[in-house]
Length: 201
Image (cartoon, one colour):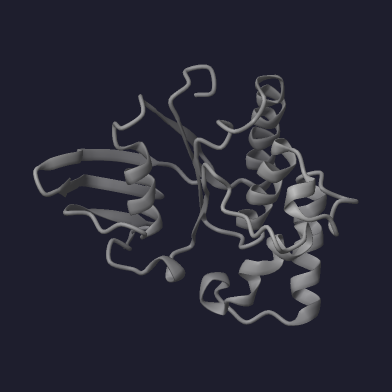
């Protein structure tokens, strides 16, 4: 198995949020975690990403235990529900931002490498021509693409998507959902997609 969650358990004082969660994900697979709000979906993603430490249980990636690794050293990237974009930066700057941190990328990139990676991902998510726009000049669907591109440019082994379509107009959801599937197949990346919507799953 490529990504394994073994008996993952998270408790806050007397409140158990995730109880003995187990899952095996193959390399290049896209899986959905479906459930109502408050059932521990986001907490599970945050444990995989390293933002939250499990009370007990372990996380393995490629056979390596990563449970105690800090987020910046995990080959995992997250697209957050609220996108978490920088409003004062342009589309290009938002996407390129993560490449400034060698720990997350795995090596220090020179200016040319950063440019090549950023431009490649901009083309992949159909943002060509919008590079100089500020975030507040974009539609919800375009902002979602920027958030996706910012995660993909890091070339993670696992991409986590936390309710990525919840802030998008209903008419656009199917289009963006199909785009995510197409990108996943094209890159062969392992994705975990969290949603409360059965249609999206």
